[in-house]
Length: 438
Image 1 (tube, rainbow, N blue to C red):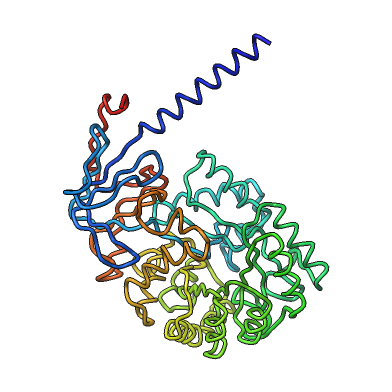
Image 2: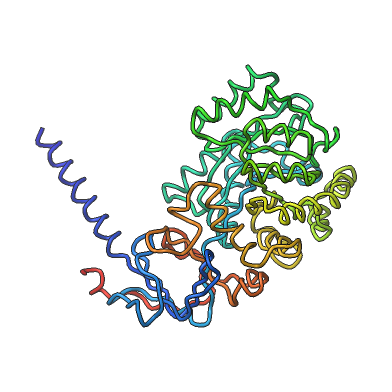
């Protein structure tokens, strides 16, 4: 009994010390211009005070004081925005072709290590939150747990587990698991939820990476879609659908799907129905733009793959333009690694630039990668904008992205949960010992 008392006292003391240390960690970012993604109006020469992992004060330098002894980061002349969010990321991506063949024998251990590397690179590229709409063997779940425990650096993750595919549909290649009919599909949805999925992903049409089938064709049946949304709804989880098909998307909307990925052949009628039913759109427009072809060539994509990319390009671009014009809610997603080089920048930044080229204002495009995406995830109380009480996910750039979205190409500072992961500016002054006693 005495031993247990000692153990409990030591544990309590360690916990109290950890809590005191956490409370004592104070950082002030000074001199930067804070972008308000809700209004577009900046706070110039601002001070952001971060205690542990949250923003505790934010405002003009004349109204917000730097706490005595706080570690300071001089952001004079820079622009501060919320951490970027990317809603279509496969950290274990292995596309058909030479690279896919090289990874064909990848073990689960190799897979999760590769995903961890991609997660770290994504975070350093300014992407602090991602959604994974399908990776293999629940390796993403293991990685998420490690990141949440602070053992590995990576974005905050929301996962769909493994994508639910039907026989002969997208994702149903040799050796892959497929499910047919509402009863099989219900069981698989429950399996993903039990594994920790916070979303469910279904494939309702063929896709670019599937070497057969009409990408615009409707493959999953209405009763199969309704089986998915029924079980997901019972668990308080939403469903997103891979779709290149207008008819399949219309059925999915009526079945209760919350989000559509890609949408290569969506027409105005479907997009208007998405608007009416508040169904989100994640365009992944980078995958079909000509500027992305060097990436496909670099990874050795086969001719049939390149032809399928080219076949969807015109309609995919028109779907994006029409979605913007119709006011469909759009959340940024790339279907490439967030950090992947693309047309002189990263895939994430290039995606946002395409939104502007397709009709968005720079502020709308920035919102699609921040506060709007947080709305899709249901995390606006925690993320998506720089406000008191929210998690300190902060990215720094050289210019105002509301004036020119290309400012995102100049990311030089990344903070997630109050911890600096990247600082190209290197203009910090450490806290004094006195601050640790306050």
